[in-house]
Image 1 (cartoon, helix red, strand yellow):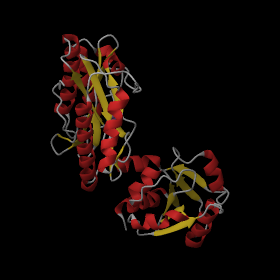
Image 2 (tube, protein in one colour):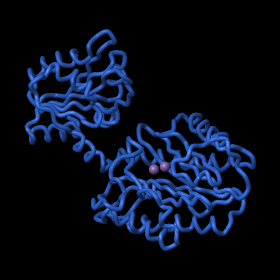
Image 3 (cartoon, protein in one colour):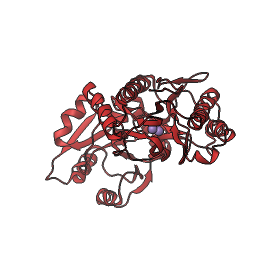
Image 4 (cartoon, rainbow, N blue to C red):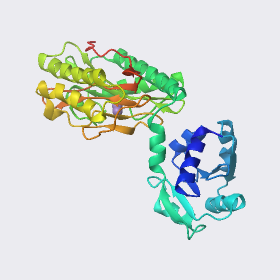
Length: 363
Ligand code: MN
Ligand code: MN
């Protein structure tokens, strides 16, 4: 039996909960290899304490679910059926009634919970979110292989963006060239690509538009690519034409912050120490008030996972954790700079997955 399913079964045995119903597409993928967005239709995996698990998905997707490597039973529901009834009938045939059920509270809506509870009116309901989050925080070697590939594609996408830079071109023109290049290679982005030029980059979550690139601008790219279900997330800020001294000062502060956090990271170091090491560099350079977000976030099947790399998180780093290190300075009258790497904790430090150069590149 798959060790991930076993881990959940052990949890059920330990807690005495009879079954867990997993419904986030990300966790269904994590457990089964089947990556699907069912929209409003029902997709989920029911894991029982000591009976083989069961997947339910739209009938038309049953062959895909099996082909993806899910070796246990899959049942389909079609659009004219009550999917919850199909599930409950099957569950009853396998294990009879259920008195206690764990669900993903962050995902199963109240409406869906009520639909489910029609069949288990007397059962207690608990959350299984934390267990799955914790399982996903340390990546297997197989997952790391995919994350490395996703990062390589992100490096390539940054290169495409840099090659596209030209006086008078708009942010959206450069953005569309990047996304077209990734699609042409057979992949898609992990989130909406960001290309921001000049002071537009001084908004950490700015929206790319029709601003034209001009000499002396710093241009910020923030993008990611999905490789076999795993995401990358990179930011590079480059100069178009020779930048001014004040822009270089901001850039160097952010670069030093990125490097300081990387230098410090190894198993056992609390996450909050990384944030502090980076923040100290930026504060010492006089830009502390312009670094307005956490240092980074976990990365994997989701673009944002745990651990959250912030100044209040005492969690110690563990080998196999994957996260971003992305200090930024957003100074509205000077520059917006962010430098973001994807990293994995190794036995004695970090492996940096994103490799596009970080010394200020001038085009
Ligand atoms: Mn990013
Ligand atoms: Mn990020």
